Each structure stands twice: as C-alpha cells, then as structure tokens.
Amino acid sequence: MPTHNYSTNPETLLLLAWCSELDLQALLQKDQQARPHKYPEKAYRDGWLPMFPEHMLSEQITEALSCFQGGIYDPVLLHLVQYRLLLVSVEDIAAAIGLKDQTRAWHALFYSDDPFLRHTTEKQPANSPENETDAFLQSLSIHAALHKRLIQLSQIWSNNVCLGAQCLRTFFFGYTRMLFQHREAPFFVTEFLGRSLQQVDWHVIAAHIQGVDAYSCECSTSEPSSEHEGAVHIPLFQELLILAGDEIRLASRRLPDHLRSNALFLSGLCGDTVRICTSEPQ
Image (tube, rainbow, N blue to C red):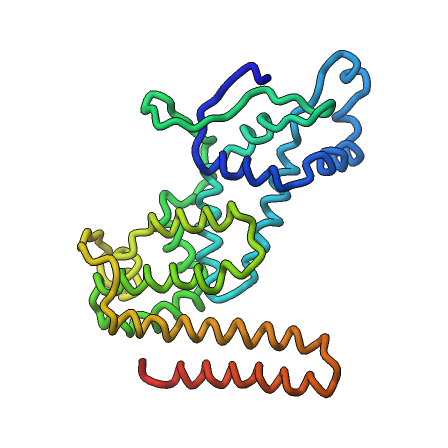
C-alpha cells in the first residue's frame, strides 16, 4: 500500500487511467536493457526499487498524438490537447505506477473538489497558452492555411460575431464527432479535446477571424438557426468527402489493376465534388 496520498486534477487521473492500456512491464524492461546503470543489482538486494521512468511515459504520450495526421484542422485540435497536457503531472503518474517486483508506488492519487486541497503543476514553458481560447488563437497565428479556411467559413455568419460563435462551435463539435472519432485515438486524447472545446470562448475566436476587437459575450443562444446550421453542414460535408477520397486512394494501392482504376475514379469524384461545393455560393 502507498504511504502517501496526493490530490491531483482530472487530466492527470485520465492519463493515469490510460496507462492501464499500455504494456508497462515491457516498457520498464526496455528501459532496464537500455540503461542498466539505473538498475544496479545491489540496490535490488538492499530493497530499493526504482520509480517508473518518466521519459517512457512521455514517449508514449508523443506517440499517442500521432493520431493528428495533418488535416487542415488538426493543428488547432492538437494545440487544444497539448494545452490540457500542460495540466498533467507526468511525475505524479510515474510515482503512482507500481509493478510487482519491479517498481514501488510511492504514493496514490485522488481527486477532490475540496477548495483547501490544491494541486499545482510545475512552471510551464515560456509562451504557453493561458487558456483554451489562447491555445486556439496561437494555432491560428502559426498555421496560415487553417486561418484562411476559417475566414472562408466566416462567410456563413456575415459579420455577426454572436452567430459566428454559434457556427464555429457547431462546426468544431460536429467535426470531432463525425471526422475525428473514426481515428484510432487514445481515449485520453478525445477526452482532452472535448474538455478543451467546451472551454473555448467562441465569440473571441469569431471576432478574431473577422478582424474586429475581441470580446466575450454570454448570449443565451448556444446553437445557430436551422438555416445557418444547414450552411455549417456544407463545410462538414466537404471535409467528409476529402477524408473519403483520401482513404479510397490509399486503399486503391492494395487492389488489383482492374479495380484500382475504379477506386481512383471514385477518389477523383470526391475531389471534384469538394471543388464544386467550394466554388458554389454557400
């Protein structure tokens, strides 16, 4: 049993839960083979057991983020997940992992809403986003293609910032539900992404895209009208066609010659439809 208990936050607990899906024993043995000096036999005889190596967890987290495959919206989604990772204490997770006859768990973690139990993470790197909205804006400042795509999307709401906020929220929640969840993403990634999207101030994002002064609004309407919601479905349909075309083209490489031409035709048809949707007034 652990000798110490420490309060922590939901993000750290979620990542610790994800660790149960990893082959931790194999990861530790790999580290022992690569760095035998960290595991001296004498220390084992004296009853000393090492803590699970933090760098092994960090490598697994980096690998998990490979589910962001370079789509036009992936940079901002990745930024939102990375923001929540800033709230995670990998050190606490490593210290809480115990493997029989391999590592010793020094403490356990628990979550509490008691205001007197505070959990703080280490000092964050310079230029780290202050919140989810800041993470979103940082992504737009770095990725010009993403910014341009959202400017095109802003034609839907015709300079109405409140309507723009509603359309953006509908679009990104729809995108992650329809187009992101088909990927083999670890559950902590989808959980972090959902938590971050909930906290984004969409009014600030809409104002930034339109090039007007940013402001926060608490308008009661959380969803666009049926007319504007239908308009939001057009770019979602475009993204679905792009995804389908790419996957058909990749699958065609494994087909015999007489079927490959048909698959490439379907892939091209998806691309042609996207161009038609883009050129037609929304």
